[in-house]
Length: 220
Image 1 (cartoon, rainbow, N blue to C red):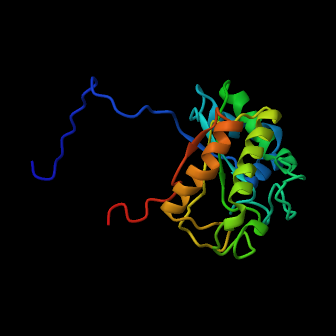
Image 2: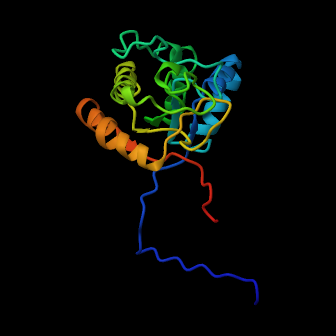
Image 3: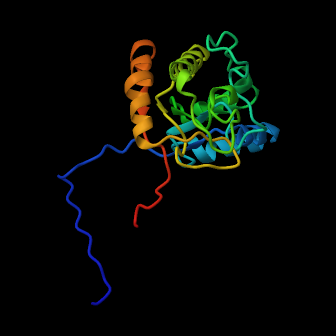
């Protein structure tokens, strides 16, 4: 009849490999989780990550530096120092990493962690702010690549090895919260000349994902 559609399934024809579903371990979500009592905390992680009693999430996203669901603007290295001598992920131990640990306990497996920056530290950007647009300063491309490496290494040392990293959350979005603008060509060049080689050398097990953006104009 008119308006009906048919779907043909060919089990012998395969394409992409399905890796799983997941959610984001944002600072605000983690802080709220830690404010719950023990019973409700257990309900949350079981509902999301338990393969038998919940959704069976297998993946999770962590923000590098603050994001739009963080308590203020902050980074792992707020001081203007290209050597990154005071780099630290200590803030993540307040709530984010304890939640990841609880999630892995509920999943009874490692959660595939994907780390993404919303913005470099303010001192690395052309507008001197983590918000309201701005780009990565041309003289600090190597430093920003080193920042990725340090984050991956510190997470590994802490017991949370990353499965992948993305270059930039929503690279075309100029917003009132953390962001940094990249064109596709700029992201390509940053990967080719700085980030790709740095990760290959110092964190070779970490995958690198590009163009972490919304589906703007997909059907235009």
